[in-house]
Image (cartoon, rainbow over all chains, first blue to last red):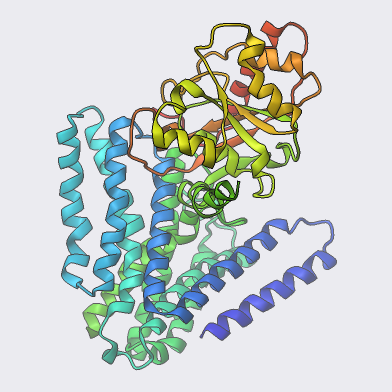
Length: 301
Length: 211
């Protein structure tokens, strides 16, 4: 699986060497930066896989931290009292991933939706702040759900009972990550190739119907090919997983676009050259990770 | 100075670049050797640490912030850190006498080809608000007309660690480096021009302003 990813990346890198020779007048620096960032991201994940499960959990906790930080740096509700709340929001990250590491599913699944949901307004009340109460509390909790709760589902794939899946839990995680990320790439490529009709121009001007359909078909075929090998899913269930991941990924992507539009920015940051910020990279996963996880969990665990 | 390098390599640089996450614009405009003067707005103790982290470790022993000796040098552990870890250029704000006498440690640093960091607001002030620059910077510019003055605007650090609070909360912060300036015309108008320049740089920030 990983070698497949690396070969694909090698081909893409080779193309970026070749393209500027063919069309010297076009500027490919963004594409090159993008592929370079891919190397770094995939390299980091590979190293963590090599070190082991704990390294992967720490890695995803760190991704959550970067994503939450980007989110908190973008939103406008930032007053003195919000600092207090944001501090506790950050503190929820080590806890949430600690529940993953000790495989405590019950607390993992309710900690942010229940306890943080109650704790944030509690802290706000004890600080005595009422102005903009709903906006601050709502925005903060939404950010936590997206960047910490949703993304931690990727890590929880590693904490599932090992016996159910002969290919191992890392294979489950790779199945989700590769399909979600490749879905972004496939939708982009199909859109460039065939797309002209905009699907939701109000939210995201670059998304085309052809891109979406092409992406969904590509990912569903890929899921059918890989699913029975990497996951406990049957062929039919794998096709379902492909649909869930590609459609989920699409809606995760456009949801973040809507948020960016609301705030009035294009990229969430400049952490990953060519991609924007980390939120731009994990936006699809915020939807596809919990959707795929619970689909799999319901069917086989 | 080994302690200073270690502190920055192991603690301050990871804090600045990973935990806070700096968004740096025009980094190439920073001076590559001394003597040079960095001028920035001041909101947080983090300002000094972040500005110093922008320089390579090799250069770090030559990068020194001007800091109020009446504030930093009268509390045991702070005093030790200010002298040994940060290596401040002490400026006694309460010293009565000629300004040349007061600025003597700064003159020495510039004569020694050092890159000095100055906050002309004189104090951290209110979080994320720019107060008026004091005129001391123009005195320096007049004394050293060939030394480049690089204005820098820092945004967000006053929210990460505001004055009077001990709780650190990370946000992505902006660092915008302006072009070198030299004394032109009157000292008074130079201070105003410098302040204007820092305000111009502030317009470059993409993130939403603090509420």
